[in-house]
Length: 549
Image (cartoon, rainbow, N blue to C red; front, side, top):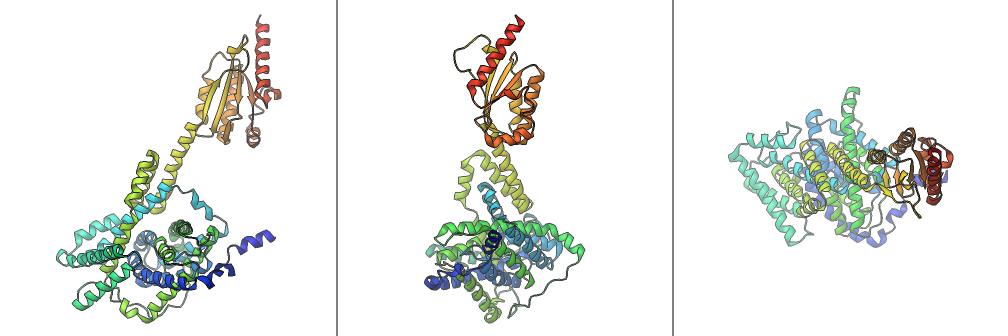
């Protein structure tokens, strides 16, 4: 009972979360305001890009940001709408409408919450690095392509669930004399961001670029489409009306969103914990916090939330040490809603597209790509396959296929590492030794290598006794044990006596259950040491020779 209570407490907030606050409150305050400034244009842009609207992005950054900060498993994680989530949500909005976002947010949050309660947080460590990098590159390409309609001044161009198709349609349907004005706006935003980043990495480049372009657009009276009216306060929470048929059609997308939220949040928390001495993160509690964040965000009319790697990095680099920084970030955004909603409403959509295009470009690191492609051939294939499927089809499918391809190469390498080796008998050779075959099986005997073992040993003719050395066998699964049983039975049917030496304690249970021990001609044919096995084999051959004489 005490263990279960302790386990439950580890998933809940505690006073220990803020034990450093007395020393770090100034740094947390400054970091929170800095991240809030950085997060404002991103929250608006991600909301617009997803199809849910700027308001939904802002609500998510505020509400989910606070909930995840308090209940999550990282001391410095900043949560809110992210580019990866936009990539998943945009086609869902096209297929199911804007109203589906709230429902998906709530149900995806419940799934993530349950995953945390079931202690599934550490499963993200099983995702190979090439899959993560291919996934990231694919997301960056999709985010860039998703901004092209707004970049060329085409509104309502999101009539396709595929970003590549939508981008091509936007170019073909653009009014090019007018589109040049939108493209110029995007170019100015990108130039300002890149210039300010070179001057100082600590400047809120995206925020400053938005301010400059918005002022220019207002003073010049540009025809650019703007964000439009924003609420001057947070809406009241409300549970959406859900029909059974609607729920059934959204369950699949909800699981996809939940999987993405869990993966991205845990990866972000892991990166944050390695950036500075801010304490470890609790993966299971992080899932609980992110699940609650998406649920509450949905109740307020927002989007599914995840941990945001870029904003979390800014938070850490700005001096954050406790959860208070992420809370301040949300409060700063809340002040914008109550004080500056009218100002924010005149921001051109093309300016937000410029911010996201630069953000997407930074997600694609040429250095990392070179590292992956130059590592091994199999890792390069996994990386390329994951990236292509991410752009062409679906993020979650891409991760699944990427893991499957990586598993295939890993199993093939493991299979090659396993071996069957013919060895010479110890001691002075005697008459009849040529009729004894000693095989050492090492490495792993699993479904990927079992067939090769069967073929290799069965190919030896003229043998009357086979000794199988299993002491060097590191891993065996049910298929390997079953194949070993088939091998013993096949040899015994041919009149070959099989002796087994050196079964390891951890393998004994599966070998007994799968009938390997029972398949031996006699219980005495199981040996702990090699020397008695060889003596027994030679005595068997000696008796056979005497009988034939």
